[in-house]
Amino acid sequence: MPVRVKICGITRAEDALAVAMSGADAIGLVFYEKSPRHVSIGQAAKLAAVLPPFVTVVGLFVNASAETVREVLAAVPLDVLQFHGDESPQFCAQFNKPYLKAIRVKVGVDLLQCAARFHTAQGLLLDAHVEGIPGGTGACFDWTLIPEALPLPLILSGGLSVENVAAGIRQVRPYAVDVSSGVEVSKGIDTLKGINTLKGVKDAAKIARFMQEVKSV
Image 1 (cartoon, rainbow, N blue to C red):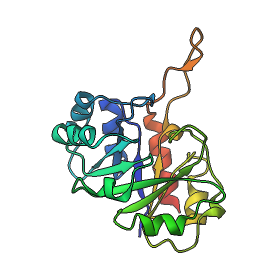
Image 2: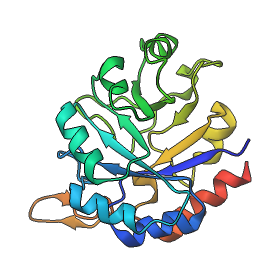
Image 3: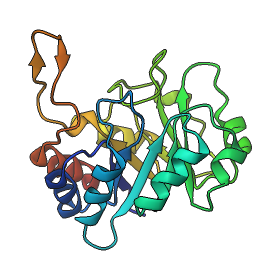
Image 4: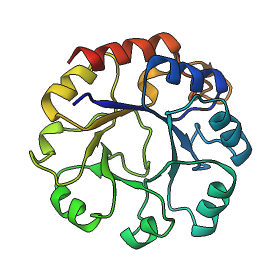
């Protein structure tokens, strides 16, 4: 079975189209206000509207209220919800939408127990554990911490790039891979504020190369 690909943290229409044209399966829209890749409801609706058919739209939330999730769903045609916070299985399942539960992996996290607890999820998205940051860090984690047989589809995330995605697929054999910073343009630094001003801006060439690496396995 071919490995599915989600490109997350889309903020521009041209990037959404680049993802679709590359053959990737899904885009991710971030509704977490503290993320540099955050999009407003209005932005998200416009991004979803430019996509051709059969590209899945995933909405990412971090400890959002149920009212916030419903407000987004009323305006944006999300196909799948992705929860990156401390949400309970009951919270995730209440919206009558397929959902993914993100788990930040580190030594001591029992992924089999997580899979049992979130058995109503469509899959587990495994990301790197960076203290105080719920995702989008660009950091990898130790893939040997993943058990051989998870009872849910596994989406491999965390620091994937053109350089390592093929190795990750060979080692982990995931259902899908999820990338964000690994296909962004080179960092532009605001020297006054010391921040990366280009987070969320994707590089179409990197997306194409990432897809080639995925298909090469």
